[in-house]
Image 1 (cartoon, one colour):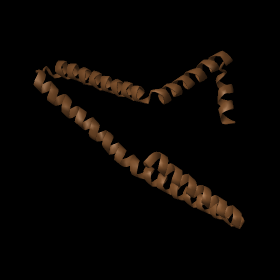
Image 2 (cartoon, one colour; image 1 turned 180 degrees about the vertical axis):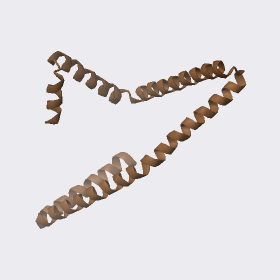
Image 3 (tube, rainbow, N blue to C red; image 1 turned 120 degrees about the horizontal axis):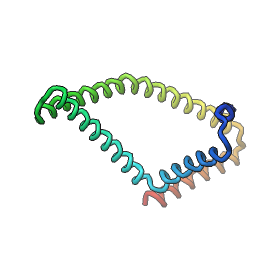
Image 4 (spheres, rainbow, N blue to C red; image 1 turned 90 degrees about the vertical axis):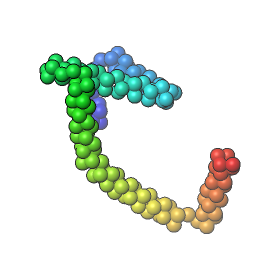
Length: 149
């Protein structure tokens, strides 16, 4: 419901909407079809971005402080080291609460699923319980035969 309100508020034409949806669908299809190439392109883009930032910092430091190549590289190294340490500190602040929340959500989900399965199991007759156990054991054995051996 909220999605449609946003789309109406933006006044997107149907043609433009088809272009946007087609682009999203093409991106998903590419990522599903060739994920290794997409990941490689993203990593290459990140590397080029890093090299560009380093080059700009080299030029800026060299012209600002009138330093030679070695001094400039040392200054840029420590600037980048400070930026990386700041990023790691930010992750250190964000990741533990996120993991704690994920753990709580997972425990709640498992508890709910266990309750639902217990209720379902109690409603089954004896023959239905035997059928369910047999199908589960057969599927597990089939999985072992196909994928493990």
